[in-house]
Image (cartoon, rainbow, N blue to C red; front, side, top):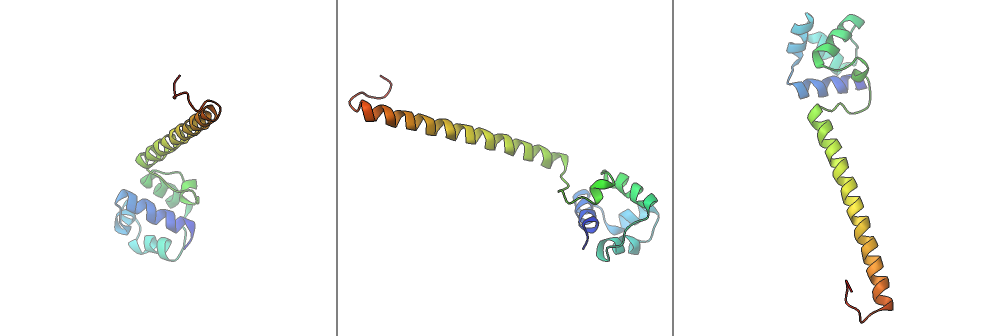
Length: 115
C-alpha cells in the first residue's frame, strides 16, 4: 500500500467518509476510489485537486509521510509538548535544589534547612 492510499484511508475515516461518498462528490465510480485504496492507483490531476479540496488538505499532504493531524490533535500535541517541557524544567529545578541541600548538609549537618 502506497502513502497516498494510507493517507486517503486515514482522512476518510477521520472525516467519516466512505468510498461511495467520495465517488459521488467526484462524479466517478466507487470502484475507482476503491482502486486508489487497494491497488495503489492514483487519481488524475483534476480529480486529485478536487479530492484534496473535499478532504481539506493540500495535494502534497495526500502524499506525505508526515502524520495528518486534525486541528484538535495538533492542539493536543502542542499542549503535551508544553507540559513535557514544564515537567522537565520542574524536575531539573528539584534536582538542583536537592543537590544544593545535600551540599549544605554535608558542610553544616547541625543546621536545619532554611536557616
